[in-house]
Length: 190
Image (cartoon, rainbow, N blue to C red; front, top):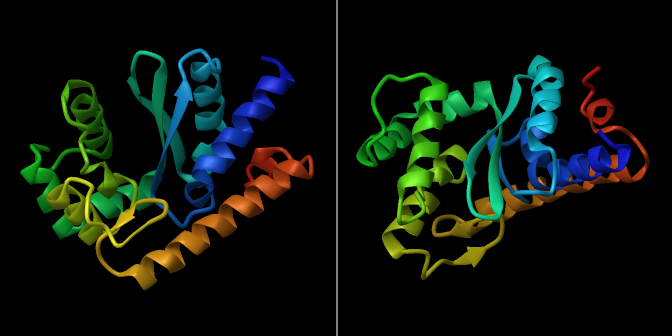
């Protein structure tokens, strides 16, 4: 694998998933061009190195020209989908009860592939506030208060604080890469 491709992949990973990589968000979704990277190679490398931090990545969907990749912190994501209210919304959308984390992700992937309509409950997996996920679904993406990393239907102030923290994570991690630091060294993964 070329150094240039590895650096380009690291930059995309850092830009789109820094809050997850730095432990303040349970998961991030990255869309990449189908031919942009040797994605299986990069996912395997990431999963081997980042597993010490409880981080994983996997492909959710290969569409026409795009691939959706989920990057997640296993512990944080399991806690999130185990929340009673989040679990209730997932159950209403057909998710089986009492399945493993991999089972939930497999079901989400099948919903993405088999749905005429994108499964907006994905916001639960991406750590969006439940009131915003429900607001988006009920309003069909319209009538939101503000839009940042997601469309906000609940507390604007809370969302603005989270958006600011996400930007700080992105700036920190992308700044490290710009300084020539390898992404795994920046994440303190040896």
